[in-house]
Image (cartoon, rainbow, N blue to C red; front, side, top):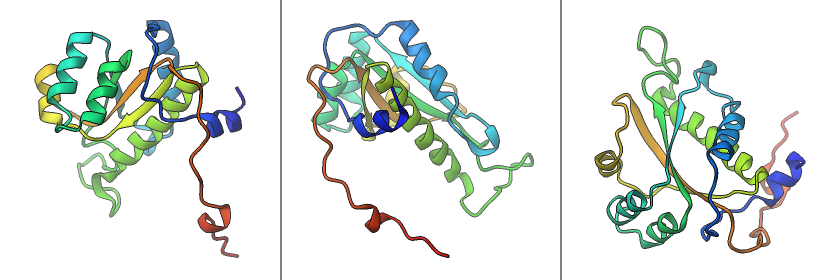
Length: 182
């Protein structure tokens, strides 16, 4: 798939078929996502994939702050990706001080780049995705053993789309988004 087509046709997918996402396909997606740029090439983003239906149900019922829309999506998805970052690396100098006035926010910047790359990679493999941001990290940690030096940044629900791709929602014109200073 051409990159421009991939970008233009990727949509947030919340309804999925029962088709399993193989371990090989998940590895191929992460293999592509690992090429995401990161602060000084620190590569701090990690992907924890939950395929167990009972565990997804527990996360849906107890970890999304009562947001039913996300709970339904998690229960329906074939795989739930818990995305995390290794803390105190991105945006830091070796002595532990911040490198810029952005302080530790580079972790989220790196996570954002990696999430977009991950979702585009999934789309290129025919796998639908939606990034979920309403969750309780402490409760997720009750169900998943995550390293202490990792912070959960978001969740990604994955599955083969149940329905065909929909048209893109309206987008702002380039003239509204771009300023060229010469």
